[in-house]
Image (cartoon, rainbow, N blue to C red):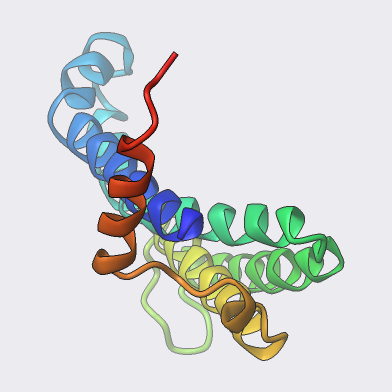
Length: 156
C-alpha cells in the first residue's frame, strides 16, 4: 500500500515538474542562454523532461528493492538503463544503423527511452522475484480502509 501511495505522489511530482519545465523554464532559460543556442536547448529540455515520470517510478522501484532488503537486484535495472542509453546515444545522435540523426535531441530521446526500459526491468524484477505478491500495490479500497483506520487515532 505504501508503494502505491509512493507511486501516486511520484507521478504528481513528475507532472508538476513537467508543467513547470514546459511553461516556466523557457522564460528562465531565455534570460540566461545564448540566443543562438536557445532553440536547441529548449527543444532538448522539452523532450528530456518527458522522462521524469519514468525516472521517478524507476527510483521508486529501486527504493522498494532496498526497503525490502533486496538491493542485490538494483544493478540489473541500472545496468540495462545505462546500456540502452549508451547504445541509443550512439545511434540517435549521429544517425547510425539507418536511424535518423537527431543530434542534441537524440540524446534526450535516448535518455527517455532508457528510463522507460529501466522502469520496465525493475518492475519485471519485482514480478519475477515474487516481491509484487509479497507487497501488492494498493487498490483504492485498501487506501480508503487505511485512511479510515488512521483517522481513528488522534494526531499528536
